[in-house]
Length: 101
Image (cartoon, rainbow, N blue to C red; front, side):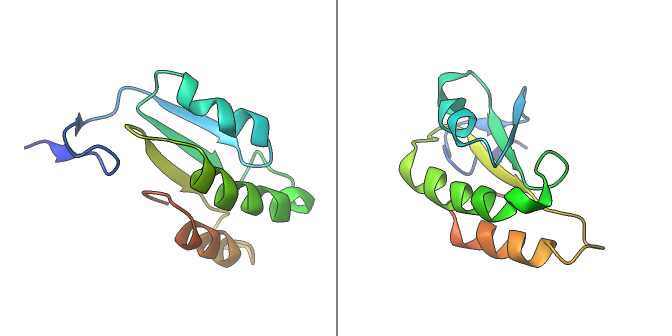
């Protein structure tokens, strides 16, 4: 049985491609819909220095609100559970228009 996509219920997954993008790079985040990927992972973990996390979280909130990701699954990669950072990352994801963490 196929699992429907969160953004486009008429399109069944599995995914062919996922594009990983550092969430502190807004210009890259905004370009994602121009690529033919099934989904995007906005990374708040390894690719974002801790001092850039406030900006990265703001980018996720704003870009998921302002950019049309129709037909794409939008995922946020949180910091590791062992850190003190993952709770703020999760709050950001819950306040944003994302499909998964």
